[in-house]
Image 1 (cartoon, rainbow over the protein chains, first blue to last red):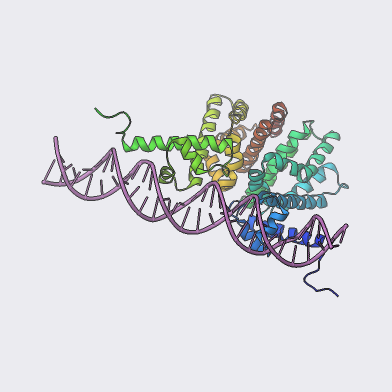
Image 2 (spheres, rainbow over the protein chains, first blue to last red):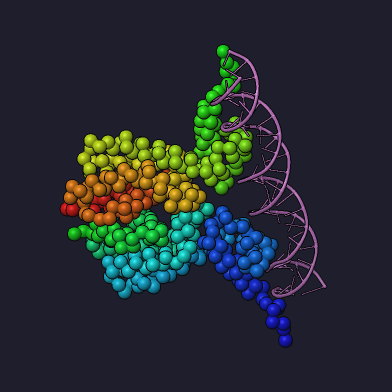
Length: 197
Length: 197
DNA sequence: AATTAACATACAGGCTGCATGCATGCAACA
DNA sequence: TGTTGCATGCATGCAGCCTGTATGTTAATT
């Protein structure tokens, strides 16, 4: 028989420690900011030492990247769940839009994905993350709409980036207390304006 | 007769020192980033000591705010110059759009105004700066267009913020090497889509 | 049994903000 | 107009924090 506490496989230990660190970091990075959060606080909240942090992550920035990646994946999952392929192109766009705005109301997400993310990791790294998770569904929806001739033909890359940034900005404004209806109305007007009437 | 070097009025000294500090900070904050630039480098480049910096600015962040404010004002001036009130609402919008994209090609501006600015000063503070300088002309142009019935009626606040963020994103993409024509085409399509055809 | 992984601890360097000290401009008054 | 007292502009030194790394130790893996 083996003791309860010790005697875990190395893989389990690694997985658990990494998860604890990411969870503690997410909490602190969102309560304050990346710059205002020290590694000492993070490891204290996670119940480990700074040695463990620097064993699993190259530096504080790499830990932050892991937090951002996880958060982007979570947002993308919520969107995919709300806008399944069974919907029409137009319905999927609307459902996905609302799902995105709802997902971004989860506290801390705007700071992680829209403020600190680009500044700490750089716009290029954030683009890579976005293309792996967030913007992917938006881009597919736009391409589908253009294919069915229901939307003007435009460069998909640019269209995705610009509409995506408008959604991001709406999420920020709504979190800051602006009228969600107003911003939703403008977003829909922008999308409708692209349709071939 | 008074010596060349010394014997300056206090006001002149203050003005000169502040300008030197802001110029040196601008250069370093854009070559690297806010976080990677130390106050020691800044004062060395400005030819003063850290004491002078902390005499004129509350902290490093306040110096950064001064740099950002100056840069936002410069961008706004370039736009106002390119889109005078003599132009029609639609022409002013197009001229102003191009002027903005051109202005943002000045090296370092995207980093100051779009990446580090929001992260370091916060979105609320950046909104305040934007409304004093950048977004003002855009908002006026949009309201004018709506008044002449040439554009759909939409909440001006939200419309300005969302179109503005699309412009910001276009500036970032173009600087990163994307096709300026593609992004310009999408921006114009978004604006055209809002017109009452 | 030997090696490697997963940590803990201690240390070095850098960086920010403040407190103190000094010199110069300035203003009021004789 | 000269001088006397105060405020302003700035330099220097110090204290505290924070990151990243090097070293040591225990437990798992082979």
